[in-house]
Image 1 (cartoon, helix red, strand yellow):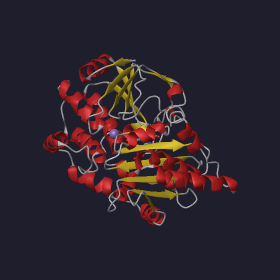
Image 2 (image 1 turned 180 degrees about the vertical axis):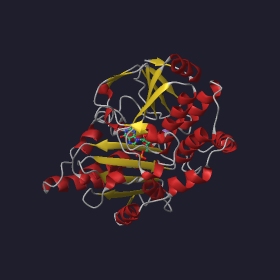
Image 3 (image 1 turned 120 degrees about the vertical axis):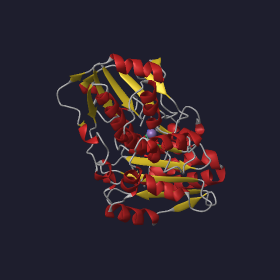
Image 4 (image 1 turned 45 degrees about the vertical axis):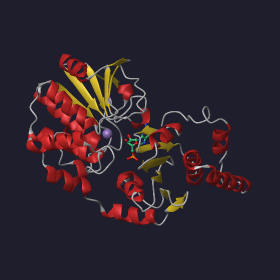
Length: 359
Ligand code: 5GP
Ligand code: MN
């Protein structure tokens, strides 16, 4: 692994003829925007460029220039001079947007997640930046590329998504400066707002289900909600707005949403206004940012996952609730209804017991 900066990343890209661009599964606006923006830049440079995304382009992102060039990882193995991996850690195998077994290429990982373990061949990591799209903008500037309206729309999508439309804590003078430049360059700001904010009827059904499961802990400082796979088709619904909504309930500092997928695995989303949920998610096998993070539990009981999360939160919020969790756990075990041995194990060995492998 070699740490690189923007200039060195640009040199690696310039030296490559065939470039593959990839990101993460369940791609959000920053993933799509960074991938499409880099794709546009490389097209401009006359590179042979392919984008690998093993998930369909949803209606929400169809407006994005270049996004329709994304394809699934081909069945037949491919080689390239460079694979640029955006907005995700290479070690996070299950969340990669492509099949790494099918691609032979040195990997340049460009990311802004502080929990990135930096295992790619080259890593350009800027945890202070609000979005991966900010780094693509830097590549354009360093290489004196043309910031066309199309490229600006892509990057604005990433920036707007990861700052929650300039409301999250990562919003700063720098994000407004970039947003301003992108607007001047011709970013279709309205199209981004309209497409990213629009929700499906199914989303409304999910929202109404989720809101009925909200529970509060630590005197209302933590809100937690859950959805089971049989309640709703969770895979096709982006729930990041739901967990963000839970966080703005009066008195709530930290919000958690548990989602069981059809395969049984449980995805957990954390949002906080003041607590380092990135660290917490990392200890539970996931990662993310300081105030927005997530992890995935392998197939199992959603109730057990809930208790696991509460046990993790108990470290932040105090033991009183933890005692209740352990009590709950004992009852669950006596009932034979849940295998919640993990929380006790965690607390018995705080710093070794946590890791559950990379989610
Ligand atoms: P979300 O809650 O929107 O799914 O994710 C919030 C943030 O946490 C995103 O920046 C995402 O990259 C990160 N994140 C979510 N789930 C995981 C996970 O399982 N592993 C890692 N490393 N990061 C995650
Ligand atoms: Mn991002």
